[in-house]
Length: 169
Image (cartoon, rainbow, N blue to C red; front, side, top):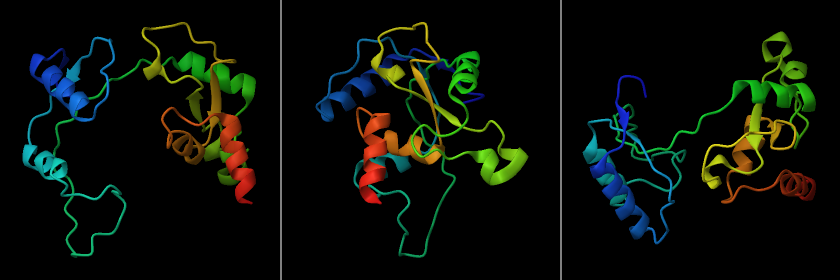
């Protein structure tokens, strides 16, 4: 979010807590900071009033496909350690731990070393910074499998995803 301030915001915090209440969920006890991005609040009102589908990739049958509006979003960003990522890949390899896909085998040199790294316990569930163990806490996964892991909250386990794949064959 280059160019926008990242700091605590009383207004954003109140909105976050109101949203948690509206969704009937409990806000985490973590302190939060927010990127304050201005503009396009009408787009957010439209979304909250049910103006969009729950499936953003569905085709709009009206023939109009507006894009590029600026939206205000509130996110938590978690620090990632690139050395831990590399240690995970060095130990486990660059094949997906779920489907065994290897980008280099498919795309050649341009795919060498490309792989996502998944936290077995999501950072969002931890209450504070911690010392990551790249061998026991992380696994290499391809982007498709990584997305599928996170279709569940909490995320599916590596083993559950393997079972889902095996049962669909």
